[in-house]
Structure formats: C-alpha cells, structure tokens
Image (cartoon, rainbow, N blue to C red; front, side, top):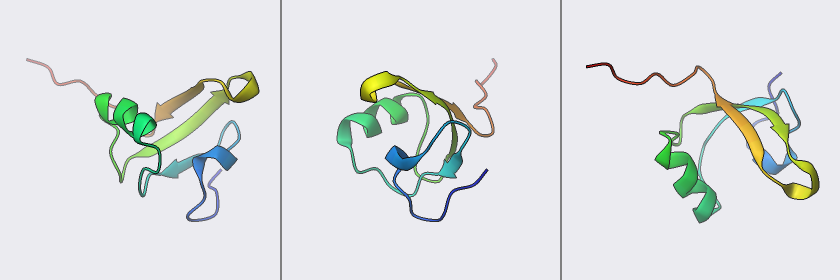
Length: 68
C-alpha cells in the first residue's frame, strides 16, 4: 500500500512501502548504504520495535548477492 509522495519514513506503519528520495539522518543513511540501499531504492516496512526501537525493513524487490 503506497504512501503519499514525499512522506518521512517515521510516518510509515507496517506494510507500507516507498522509494527513498534522500536521507535526512546520517547514521541511518550509513547503515542502509552498508547493506546496499541507496536513494532510488524501494523499501517495505515489516514492523517497528516498541518505543521508537529498531525497524524491520525489506528491500522491494529483494537485493540479490552476486555469485562467482
């Protein structure tokens, strides 16, 4: 279920997905870029931890690892 354009991820609820336009949090940006998520990538929020804790997100479509 898509969310209106240009909405902060902090307003997402479980099941919502969106495309990253830009990062506003440097710490989060580093963590996401470490796993290959860049601006232009799509993510789906599976669930949020209680009290502003961790988020479980899934790249949409899932990232694939290169094979040798």
